[in-house]
Image (cartoon, rainbow, N blue to C red; front, side, top):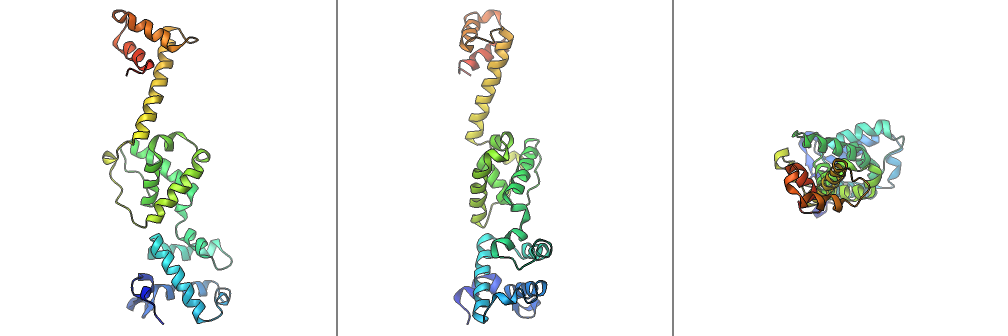
Amino acid sequence: MSSISDFSNPWLLRHTKLEGISLMDHLYNRLNGIYPNKFRSNFRDKQAIEDWKQAWAEAFDEEGVSPNDVALGIKNCRRMFDWPPSLPEFLRACRPQLEPETAFFQAVRGMQARVRGEMGEWSHPAIYYAAINIGQFDMLNQAYTQLEQRWHKVLGDQLAKGQWAEIPPPRLALTSPQDWEQGRREGQRRVRDLAQVISGDTNKDPRVWANRILARPETCSLAVLKMAKAALGKE
């Protein structure tokens, strides 16, 4: 007996190209072919099969899984699993690029490309938006081990949305307030270090040489004056 969800979930609709069966029926047949007897033995009766189709179709719809993803998942099952996969295992087979660690390093490469004014390669928009949420500074300056828990959560939250805006070209990507503040602090630190070396006061309070320079502005270049102001937080 069909439920109301059968008519709203595209995975449960019948397709003429599939000889009148649904995408879920087709997936059942493919998995049964890859794992003869092993897959079919999971279901004690027809109702169990219907329950399986409903649960997986609902997950595919919520996760934004496409037919192409499922085709890749079927292909990957042949080399990844000796036994029929669970739903989480099959989803990973459908989107191997969305494994958190793999996605993280893809995001780092993508962010590096965008710094150069390039689009970057993004296999899924959720990876891009997760990277933007973390922030360019952290993505490019912290190791995976430092960001692992945070990245897992942010990527999971993005994937749960199910739909995403198109990835904008680099010129439209705005620096987040967090990136700007972190960059400003890092810049100030480097300026202070450089100015201390220039002034020879590497072992003293940076405010000492900064105040000394600002007390005699006529003796210094504009660049040194800016460094002194930055050291005092005036730039």
